[in-house]
Image (cartoon, rainbow, N blue to C red; front, side, top):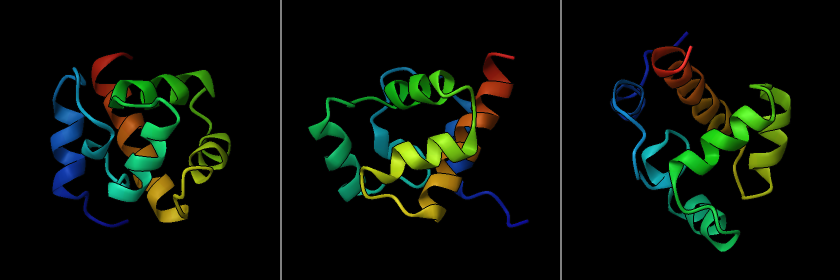
Length: 90
């Protein structure tokens, strides 16, 4: 298993607040633009989908790929949301 990125570590230790999607690991400018085009303008919107999909990696990956993410992007984002959930909600 690789060491978590700085983006991952920064995201999981702080409240989600009004952060833009780009504060999530795996969400770069192109994916963020595609998400915003669908009205997904905050990281908490992505957290909401993560929870709606019952924290299921396959379902989350399928959903996020619609916005241009690849497997690596999806996994990085999922892992950060999962750890954030464990730290702040579980």
